[in-house]
Image (tube, rainbow, N blue to C red):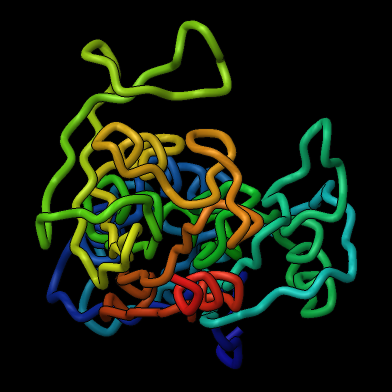
Length: 298
């Protein structure tokens, strides 16, 4: 037991506090949810100095905590689909998604998805865990996609998202020239009563805030960096259509473009706390060729 090394299924933590309850330490220091703590305790997956603790266990400086994350069965079929990994640790995997591929199997796309490729990667690496997506991207949106490699990683990243610790930035090319160098679009988003596939700005919708900054202006278009302050479905696409600058090539909220075969939207920068280290990290997904070609043409 003492020779164990950390991996996707094992977390080692040496206590630095003089005296603290185990549940308080895991909540305050490691930001464990109460639900995850109770499940691990119930299934005897936590050891303090190689002994099973009680829920109200007091622990002391120098104590060694071992947390085991159960192996799981994944129903997604592994397929040899290339994934471009730009960051990886024991708990999360960050990839640069190419456009034109669905993230998760659906009725119309039951294979050939990013999830199938990640399941294959997990199998090759001997990671016996479910594929858990922290964020989603539309089929024709490219860029940063975060996958948790265990239940702890998923809970940690979900916590960061709900507490605005994670910063997500996109680059998009929109129609028309935006006059202001930067701005905030604060407009509620809800379903379109006439078309359930579409979302629209409506007063009775859910709160949605998008921050933007102009990167470059062209004759009839603008390159914009966008930061999501909320995370509603199609938020960027809906908000920029709302202000009269729909995304170039967006066939759902605008029209197809002869210059690019999809909406010119790319998730390019992500800032977050590394789950086990609590250190800041930032990853960047370089612009894909089709958006670079679009910029050159413009």
